[in-house]
Each structure stands twice: as C-alpha cells, then as structure tokens.
Image (tube, rainbow, N blue to C red; front, top):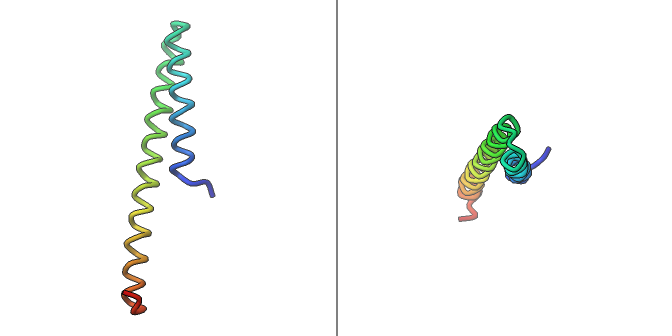
Length: 69
C-alpha cells in the first residue's frame, strides 16, 4: 500500500504542473483540473499525517500497557 503522504505529494506536484500548463496555454479546464489534483494531494497528506498521529498514540498506549513507560 502506498503511503498517503508520498502519494499526496505526487498528486500535489502533478496538480501544480497541470495548473501552470493550463495558465500558460489558456486552457481553463486543465488549470481547474490541476487545482483539483493539488487539493486532493494536500488532503491525502493531511490524512497521512493524521494516521501517523493515531499510530503514535496507539503505540504510546501499548507501551504503557506493556510497562515500557
């Protein structure tokens, strides 16, 4: 399974390229598609960050239960 943060960065980068290409060529459809890709990438990164925080919290609880505090 691909890491959400990595996948999000790739999507954000693709979105920025599409958005720039759309701006240069005057293609509003491509520019808007880039904005959507960029927003989706940012969201995936945030989901990845949240998953990391949940995983860290679960690990801390598990360590306390095991007496590794």
